Length: 297
Picture 1 (cartoon, rainbow, N blue to C red):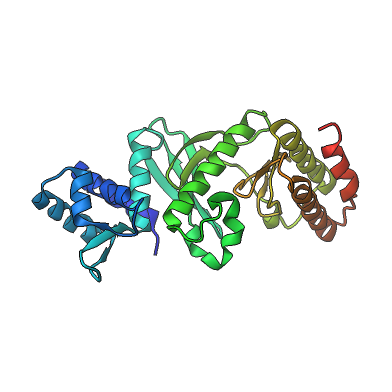
Picture 2 (spheres, one colour):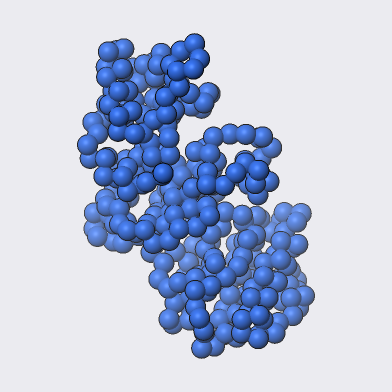
């Protein structure tokens, strides 16, 4: 079971030489699933005795998968090993200093609280798309292109990079969106999000107002940021007690110039209208709302 908390706990027990061995294995995984010992020695630049000693250490800690079925023994990082390398880099850059409790668990990611050296509290999002199957790979075509297979570690890395770049772009629009703080490998660090997902509210005092706020934010992001969310629903819209809303989870986003952008945009609008219609009896005209997005754009 993947456990970033265990990786964070073990990080302080590792030597810099152990980290270097893990990074050498990661380097070798760019070309093959398992990195042979001779390549680990080459990338780490350690003598064979030191290489074997360090491999034994990090393997016992539980960061590696060992393969001895071929002509030579090889190793690859498991998810906890990948977690550890990402955490190590974020700590080294002083982006974070401590990992806090789990805040939320989704199909594709987990979110933890974290803190930096100045005791600023952030949200740490770690991609976990290996929970799903490659049978669902079509969902991630916009991330991986036409590759038929690749390591889930690398898929998660691409996903985090994609969302981080989108968050940076949206943040410049001054829409009360979370500030992206940093990212490494499959982890994003951002400002802590107050409030909770729409899906978890039993009732809202003024649902028409909240719906209008959502539509307005979508419109601003579309017109000024040239971005369509692509997977919008009640589980990725956060509302706080003051009625401020925040759209999250931009993994499936696409530029407004994309050939299917207006089709996807209409689907996003319909998802939100359907939710408010079924739960709060709020009526809205999807076609008219769509017109306000695309005219003069």
